[in-house]
Length: 515
Image: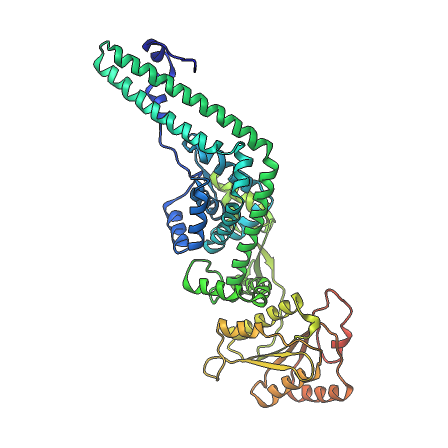
């Protein structure tokens, strides 16, 4: 039999329960959301979440074990997407949010992968949602273990939730009874007994909830390492998923800076994820296109007429005025410090003069067995970046895939109005998915390149030759090639894929003017 705290009405009136503010605060409505969000952010998430049947199934299954799971998935997105995530007050959180959601989010923000993930997801809708969906799916699959590690005994989280609901109900009843007693102002033994009983119930439920809460807290501390490991593994997978989404859009989209949910981007993600080659190429091509776009945007005259561009870094002396302006307001100083620590401050960089031709481009790409994997993907990314340069200048571009003497494939990209072959994402992806395999022969692609110059309208072209260098050209053909170069004034630039096996320059030195 439980010991009663209050025996008379006077005992209750002398207790904290008699203070209206205390009663109202204790019985106030609580939320499962740990992080605050704006209406705009809520609309963005709702749009991203719409139509995601897989997420719907995960949340429904997980909410049977953790009723606050859907709020957790929403908060995970918020922590990835928001520039400055804002946390709700602890007293405004439900028991489930305090016990499970908040500790999980703490492990997320304290993980070593979190800054990297934020760098990819912050302000970018699709990468942030892709990361949140991946994290939620993995956490949902490990929810039984996670709840046990955080909550201790099985069902302790549900027990705490029930105790807090019973406590709130008792507080509401006590509040109503005390207000009734204050209004009548008369002695009423039955009413006084009801007030005492309600106060004892509220006190009992409060103490029980606090005791269960302490047990859960002890369990959470004891198993912190296991929880951190599980969350870290899920966060690492989420970071990879977000990076992949960003790479795909940056590499293959006509609007690489647009990371919003739209039909084009969703179709693009589905198309590229179905091809291992395209995913591999995207790892390099997205970055190359970003460098190319930054160079286009940021060239301008500064100071005494020198040409500059912009770069990211942490040099205060070269920082833009707009970045230094963040130091003017106390609320923006943390943002400046964050950008400084991550070397993300926009700053001036001296641009050296670049001399380049403005003719058509013929790119010979080695697709022999020795280039399979990352070397081939890197080479395709270089070729497709050259294609974009040609496209911007309204120039012709030819991609010659080659391996042995009998394996050759030519993709022609011609500006609008000059013939077939448009610069569409699909045509670029089809070219990128080509991989011939086999041995290596340099003469066949060079003969094809010279034929394009002499007979197929590429008379103003220069040649780029991408290979790992494991081949030679005969002396007889070298003489023919030099004669053609003299007649048509083209140059051959070699790009060597020999990082893993350096020292192959000799194979290109015979016919390349620059390596």
